[in-house]
Amino acid sequence: MHIRADHDTTGYSQADLDGLVEHILKEARTRGASQAEAGASIESGLTLTVRMGEVETLEYQRDRGLGVTVYFGTRKGSASSSDLSPAAIAETVRAACSLARYTAEDSCAGLADAALMAKDIPDLDLCHPWALEPEDAIAIAKKCEDTARGFDKRIRNSEGATVTSHQGLRVYGNTHGFVGGYASTSHSLACAVVGRDDNGMQRDYWYTTARDATQLESAEAVGRRAAERTLARLGARKLSTRQAPVLFTPDVARGLIGHFLGAIRGGAQYREASFLLHAAGEKLFPDFLRLSERPYIPGALGSAAFDSEGVATRDRELVDGGVLQHYLLDSYSARKLGLQTTGHAGGVHNLIVEPGELDFTGLLKLMHTGLVVTELMGQGVNGVTGDYSRGAAGFWLEKGEIVCPVEEVTIAGNLRAMYRDVAAVGKDVDLRGSVRTGSILMGPMTIAGQ
Image (cartoon, rainbow, N blue to C red; front, side):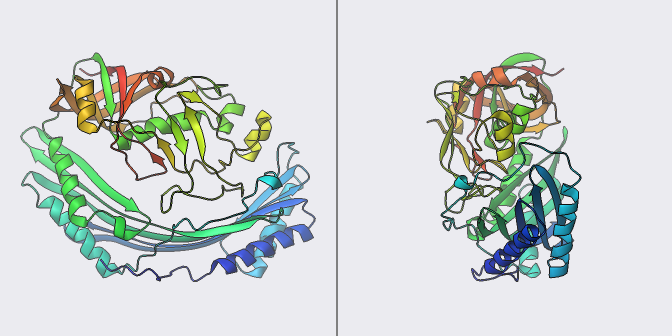
């Protein structure tokens, strides 16, 4: 694995994009816009997949683009282009201005308040380029897949091993005088294999991701974990319908938190399309549960000094003592609700579910008997009512010990009740995303089977 920190594939500096954004904003002002905002980005990446020892796909991506939004009073127009030339910039701004003259007035349209713009943009250690040549990527992917396929004779097939490396540079600016941006990278390695025994076939996977390739799990570790997870699912059974506690492993527990975040977004609130409508200040979780946002963690996947409107991010307690402290607002939804933006245009930044004292084994003993969910299927979540029904696979547990793998069951409940019934959060925190959580143990849910 060859890594060189000074490898740059974008071909543009931040100063180049800063100047381009400033030029776009000046052009918008010249055409009469009362306010404007613009963004420019340069991205490049390599994706390679090896399957059954052969290179299946090798893709190199290089993209660039710009976007501009102009406001003529409360009329708004937007346009974008993949051409960064001066002529294309002029035409893109002209198109946005033309559109704005035909759109309806909207009293909530406009830039976020000038006083909220980020003033200090620290280096959050987000950019670690990887000088990944195709030959290196092939060697890594083959080693990963070979490890998985050779782990046990019951591993009969493979969906492949994939290596990705991505680097980008993004700059945002607006007519408040804010211009800011940063370079970032993301790298990953994933593997999925198929196992077979007398009871049939099962498939599972594993992956690792990081901004710095030196922090990825080794190819052997990823392949081995994918094989172990696949073998553990062989001999899966169906369950009879019952009520029992459910333990969501960290990678699926992230989805539970995602449904909560969707319900408290400003758009869902002002449209009155949320099962948590008007829930700010309400106790939604047990006393011990805390959700904290920490945007400034160096090198983390969700770190950012400002949101997509230039508003400074900051440490926040989203849920404290089980009580929802505020919604997730951008400037538009905040005005719709008569509130102020919380700096969440574009989403959350390192949301942390405070871990408890128990590791995964400890959570199994605490649950005693129930279903461990390692995979969810389907989209059976109603964001308006909170009704939750999804296909699931995992393991049945009795007396704190795994009895057998489980497949083709459905778990059902209502998210409001599920959040109230959270029994524990594990300290087995998964860092592979902008939401960091350990396993989450729920109270009894309906498990529909045979």
